[in-house]
Image (cartoon, rainbow, N blue to C red; front, top):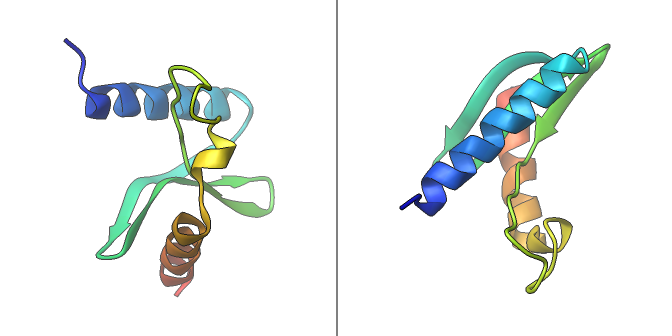
Length: 85
């Protein structure tokens, strides 16, 4: 049986493959701080991009976009700011 963690890792792997096929340059994966994590960080032309990968088996409880609540957004922002320092 596949665990949620394995499913999430497979989704991140797929996202990385897709992004790199589009010309995205991967800088790091799973950048972690005590209060947050960013799944993928990379460059797209002149932009530094922070990617949160979300996997949903169905949209019964909302899609991936709806799963990023205000608190999660704030954690991603704090983690991105730390990375930029």
